[in-house]
Length: 253
Image (cartoon, rainbow, N blue to C red):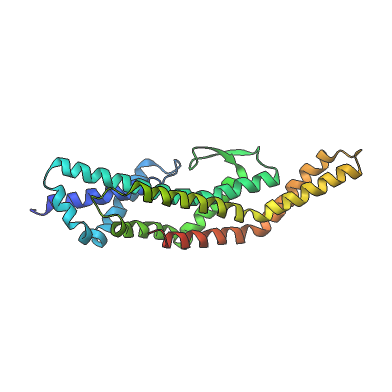
């Protein structure tokens, strides 16, 4: 029983960083997931991580037991670190939403909107479908284990009690945003090429036959061809995204 305060303090610090990161990770942070379920996942994950990182937190736990102010300071730094790590992963995952939005634009389905709990608003239907498929594939291939593994390694890069350098996290966030934008555009490249070719052909047809009602012909043809191309490339698109997300998660910390 004499070790109980130490065990509780250790668990509280683990839960602070783990819970803050899980509240921002894709899938775990969706509004569609009940709050109690997210809390239970965070509590269980923190308990499972306790044996892995307990050796690195020994000095911090001893310092936290010296007073309430020290404990509050450590918990605050852990919350900030977890939130920053979760936000960086979320920025990178937005690449698939960007790709879906670009594909919807090229196909002509931007007006078909649905509620997206992860985005906190409405997104095109096709973008929502692609993002759900990507999330399920990430879960099926164990990419979410890499996210949690990166959190475990973060105790080596960002020790407990040390406030992370704002400049380092800013560079990490900028890098994630840049990588996400580039990845999203590259994933949607086949549909971007289709959109350019289709619209150029449409313009030539309007010039050659101005009496035709091009709009009534082009809209259904654009949707049909766009969906056909999307169905052809979606497997490669999702596989490429999951592979890139896994490589990025391994190199995160």
